[in-house]
Length: 247
Image 1 (cartoon, rainbow, N blue to C red):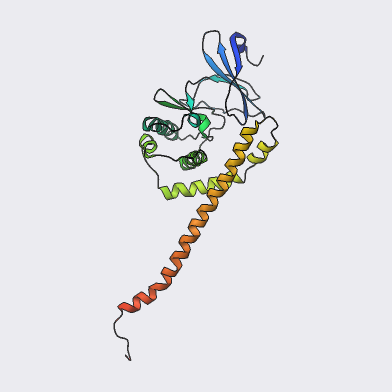
Image 2: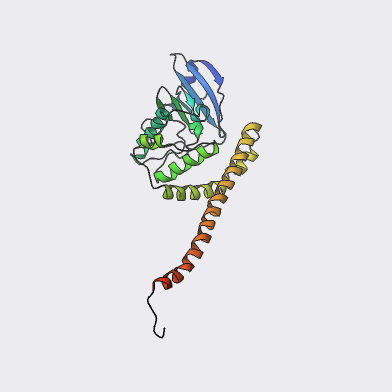
């Protein structure tokens, strides 16, 4: 038995979900509470601090197995499209953690549970400190992989909107970093990954590479337009000059 608390469980069943790195079970405890048992496929360390507003951790061990409070609702990936009210609640959820200097560090759409007019970020395996723009750019990137984008309602809930050109720069940097990471090979080597999940991450990689190529192609075309315009400037100045000596 992993945890003593599981001895009181009246039901343990596989949890249907889209975990790429965890094996998930839904646990019903004797007192009626529901919890999620998350077991990483590869042992890892758990965070050393408590995150305000995160689901309560009921038990954990040194391998990285964790029994955590179950949050009712749907993942954002399954709930899309959602109302402006839901987007505002998601923006508020991000604002709550960013204002205390924390990042979730894994803001894929399966780690956001929405329901009853509220949003909860789950799976706090890798929280840390950093630039909120990196996290916002990563969230924007994951939304793109699901065929949507951040609406104004999200920024209304978040409380402010960053410079969008700066956000794009962070997204380009993050996209390069993700494409260069070992995630893709690890997923290819994972024999427990369902074929539909493997197809999904392969498609993600194609979409990311295509989006990144488009960003540089757009910048290059803009530069090509700017260069001829710059070269025309001396001619424009000649049109406005007065008579030259000797004329």
